[in-house]
Image (cartoon, rainbow, N blue to C red; front, side, top):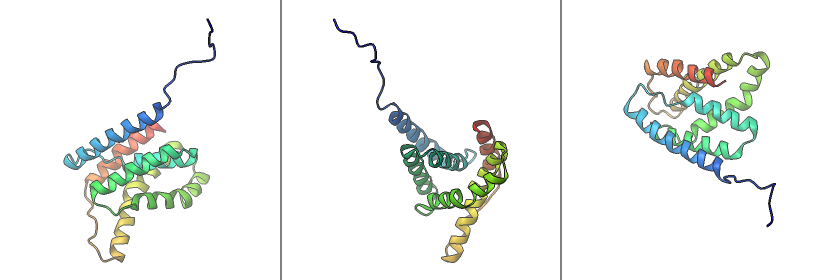
Length: 157
């Protein structure tokens, strides 16, 4: 009888299955966040995941995050691809300059959160002003989202 000492069982598609489950959980969560306004839409967390996927050159992770961002836009009524465009612009032009100056990880979590919420709102406000569309509303929920997602990002970083 022949033995194969170098063989072991592994799931070939375990990462793909985990990412599929993550997308499914996010779709359910973002739908609930539209019903319950105290649930943050996790935009800063997606920005951090987008940044990390680009930094690691992880194409599969990047595609998953892009899909979640597009679903976020569709659910909240934003322009198609605006988050991907905004985050790509920030990651290529602003984040490297800030990383040269700051080495504090918690400070970076705060900056990511501030870029994600007030920065994206300012980006959408500017675009809507240029195109003479209705300006996106801002309320006290954004402050709650910033605090909650900063705490989540500070724990992850």
